[in-house]
Length: 314
Figure 1: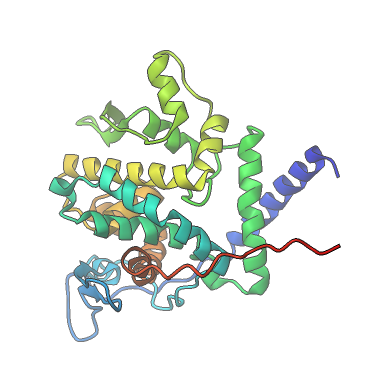
Figure 2: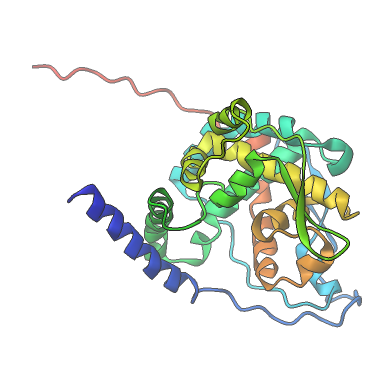
């Protein structure tokens, strides 16, 4: 089969899977009365413990945020699912995640240690790849990687601005990061942006943009760069840095939900978060991947002995 036919197949598959994906959204239940905490309310904070790792104590609960606002939120969150092959990818990315966290964590704003910032990056990657798989059967889990590949093919053909895995970043967002743009809403309630100093470590595109001030990469070129898992980690950390600046601009207290909400829906304030039905599903599901991310950052599994290849005797 020719390359063109293969790409056409992926594009058609993309349309089909997107249609199926739209029918698989979980239902939510209506929260209790706003601003009323009683014995039926969800816990306001969560603490996370992983053997041989420092505990993360008192991170706010997503369910409590939606409960307090009287907004719908789900209660049937599935257990975290970890795809075995992606676990190997995450193990390879671990050092890059930690390094990117150190480069992009603005502790004066986030009040997080670099390792905690790395945990959120790792949890975001786990969630983006595994979150949908947790709600799908064997067939859905087999189709999802093909669906992700189809979106990548569509981007490479210039057919759209689809998300690129493993970070689930759109090329348009990647281009904004390369330009160091901080989106915000001005006093006239109009979307605008201002420049910030933002370095995408290892990006050849940004290096070329700095060399030629009037040159801009195409979205296809950006898609190709963020499809590299190691660069995807750097772009994701940079997007979290932008979230920090946006939260500071909006006078919003930063917590783990700030980064997830910004990355998924482009909002940071509690009011915008609780008004977003998509985030009502995203945030409680994301929480399930925090312990796994802690285990990766603080207590990575030991890598087994390398395979020694023996020549076949003639």
